[in-house]
Length: 137
Picture 1 (tube, helix red, strand yellow):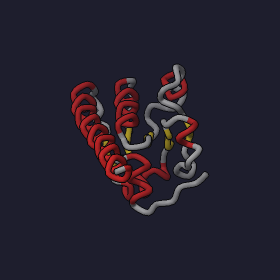
Picture 2: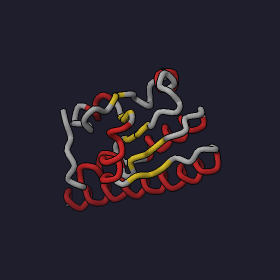
Picture 3: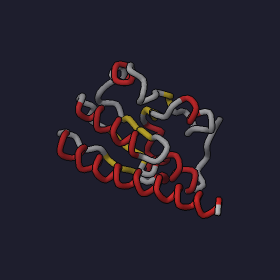
Picture 4: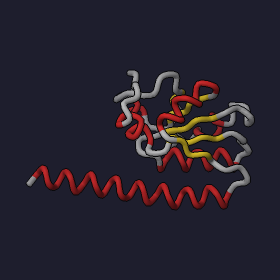
């Protein structure tokens, strides 16, 4: 019974994050002049070495592991935007979170602030891990 409850809960979480991601994608596309580019984990790994990788998760989430060389910048902190605005707006910015909804929202926000090269890890670090890509502590 516990196993079934866990499967149902996991399914609900994944379903809600996917629907949030879709509505956020539509908002991001219509609300900004620069499109946020969604990348698969493999494409994110290949392309992100030339830019700044932002992990927008909380410190508790990051303690479980992160992508190498990622800068920790908690989206829920009040200083998120002011810290993000310290980076050059023409620099490539690669964002990720746990499953993709929060980082897509952060990417949309940066795009609205004039960042011109904004990339988003579709599926978040969960998709990264499921693809067999490395995570550091």
